[in-house]
Picture 1 (spheres, one colour):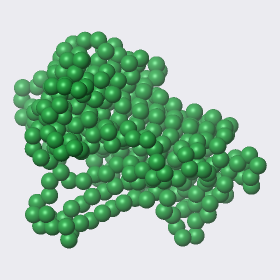
Picture 2: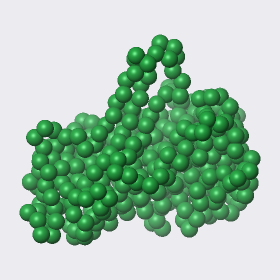
Picture 3: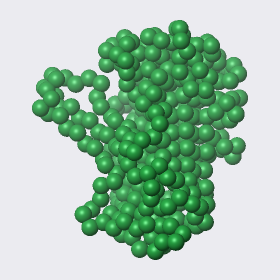
Picture 4: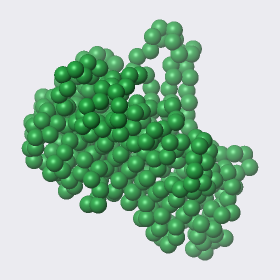
Length: 376
């Protein structure tokens, strides 16, 4: 490996422009509403919000960051958060509880980046073709819709009003793959489909735990509109758990479309339909080391293998898939380098939200690593 070609791209979300302005929002300050501070801000500015409840609907159209005024603090917006006519902008929200949901409005033709970090909201609907959405360590009660983005380390619950927790849909004009990594999707009290994919983009569903109570469906629905080639998508190192046995596969190909897919190192409990829908001529499907697991082999809430579980060291033995402790890959969401252990640690003053690095690099080739980190 030639380290002289190392390329590191790190997106530091607190970095702004040299003449950016910080505006503090507090009940007794110059700005006592977040909306007032937004109206006074321009691209590159940062809004620091004191703890408290803010009864307002936020509309953001410029490249600004809205963050807690104090490290570890939280603020609550009792209304909605709308990204409106923010074509080509980059918007960051950290530490907010948005009780009225997050959405977009207006026309989008240029790359627009939305980052939501360590926050809570009732739903998130940002599936415009030009919007790249990044969600890190968030809790979302209802439905999340994206056309391009990364969802990493989140708790995605699914409320009674939605049938599907995450929808990957639409045709994105952006080049990046879609990453759904290290999340807890569903709960023992919900009855929801975990992920439905109608997009034709390359996706990676890795190291998630899917907990499904009586939804009468598969955890992942591949409902893609047409056959396609291109780079492989991946469904790797997930734990799929139903609370009662039902005759559905963990992954369904409901439209029967054919594309390059790697399905590996997944633990599947109580899906009596097996791991994936059987299509005899799906030659682009590569399956290995998927295990139909006894519910006693793993935690029903976290997907972690219990001590002595046959899921331990049952994954692909290639060194590129080693666990964090450099043992053979465990099957399920705690196996491999993207283990959910990366996303269940306590919040610190600074967090690497997600790092994407190649598993294998040829001699003399550059090492391309991208990482997104954030701090207040």
